[in-house]
Length: 275
Image (cartoon, rainbow, N blue to C red; front, side, top):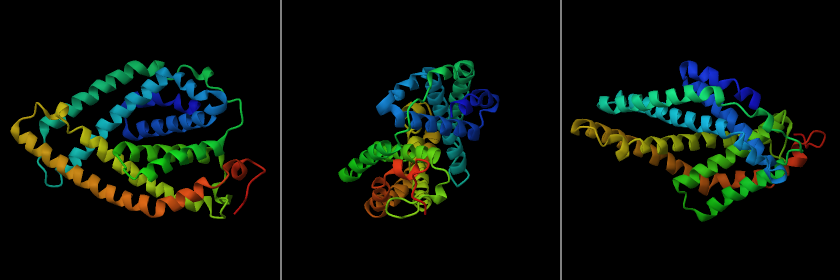
């Protein structure tokens, strides 16, 4: 993953394309998940300090992507009967340009430290899956589902499936300990992750309607922005209702199928249970 990541900064600063930024962030998360998986025996999670520069680049591209998504969201909503808040959009554009300049300064330093990332031990997939399952189950048992907890469910699931996909090839030939196809279960979780991603996007979008972003707008623009905030809030609540149904009904069943399997037995070459 690191070798692929090193190619992104130069590509990103050419056009700051949303898709390229997204691809970079996915590759970074895959690498981070793999390091976390190895952390219990090797301390590799600390190596994300290789990292200080790369992590800073990742965080800064995240800020840029959030602003780009917000800009796109506002434009989409304003074409659907809401007034266009020109001053607000101009403020987002200024913030975007500021971050783009910062990324250009950071680009040549973003990928230093490759020699510090070394994997010496056999991947510890099953304990990593079990750990993340435990984190998710604790949230499910509490049944509060704050935005932070919903986001943690998403992060833990992503860590699980980034590592499984990295080690399991081909996925179609693997069955879980229950006999259920791993591919079938991953299709369910992929769909759920899409919904969790949309929920996170709405949560981030609402941040950009807080006072620090709208305090200098005039009355007309404030009315327009408040209308947009109401629309996003409504969309977020609708997604939340769908997620709560998942969490209370289907999700625990699928999670148990995942958590009760031994992935070191299923995925280690030469020691698989085939479908």
